Image (cartoon, rainbow, N blue to C red):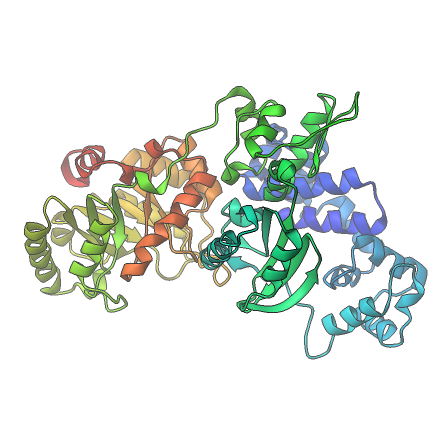
Length: 564
């Protein structure tokens, strides 16, 4: 559904439609993607207009998709706009307005026609296009290389690289302040590039040091206050050096998101203010107000400071206006880890003792060892239990919980004997195969099992590699509440499962979530940072996270009897 609205926006922009219409459809696509409930059902019931950015026209078009399979306006434009023009947009430097000119003024309607025009140097007859544009077209549309899809980097890969670079630049004697911005600072699960905002006594010296870094593979742009480079690992960094008095304005603007900033500007206009990256302008007097900190920016506009992770235009502005933003969970609040593996699972690298001591060194009170059930057949389960008991005597008061991760079968059963599960403190059930085979029904059945405490990485997605199971989260959340079963935010950087939008829906329903590392080696225990970031994007506070509690409180929440 979201893709149809995005395509409609693309075609409207190529057609030269008013910018507000294009933006409305793009915002609708984003809202549809980020809404955890069934938008189609809401539209059929006349309730979709309750969503920000969805008005009567958008709601009608959603109903058209449900009833007719397509948006009429999209079908009409597909009939009159050549289909290949969408492919033109993938070429660097060709935006919708330029694509429209190539179509209308040069009569080019196919990818092959565009390639030939570039090779014959016919594109440069259009004002604003030159040899560089033709070079980009030929490179993007070469026979050997199809137009590449935008590459996105996992947060777990980007964030360490960003932190290392920021730390190195911070050591420059001329640097006063420097921070990451953009989607990395909002802790989105993937990023396309990284924005850095800095203040420096010698801006030109800082950008020169930046482009000369040994890890730079390509310098895309270099000026006295701006520079863009591509790292050897493929990450693209954009550095802007700004005056100290405008640092807060620029940092707020480049942290985004686009929807958050747009809503912020629209609200400011109603107050007689104009907001941009350079400052806040009082329209009546033309006074320009700059800010050294983001807190000053938000305060001047009537809001409390909004954490970067919440800046997605999903209700944070209204909450900040009322002073009702949640106090978000942080890594230090975690008291234990409820999903980790040891060499009892052959896909892990470190022993149970090594994993436990590393968890203890992180300041945890407890950890659940949850090795895979198929590695604990026959006498191995009891042998591991004996090792856990011996370690607990040596490591007290730290506690290793006897746990297990079981597979959810095609019929919803789990693959471990009931007597073993009954002996466990903590049981995770997870989908590991056949993700398109009745996933909802299988998870619902697993939740009914008297000894299953948590559903691990519920959709089983692998970001960029596997979409994962197509789940209807509402009945799963309801069943979790009914059966006192918890859902996991898995912190592996390529999982981050649950997604932020689903975790927020669980929170709003009153369900607590476990943030777990799913670590298979000592270094991966630190992955909980990414799970916590996902939880913060979902508006979770410490009270919404199960393992911010001492184990005795977790046991009490599990209840008495078989679910304990």
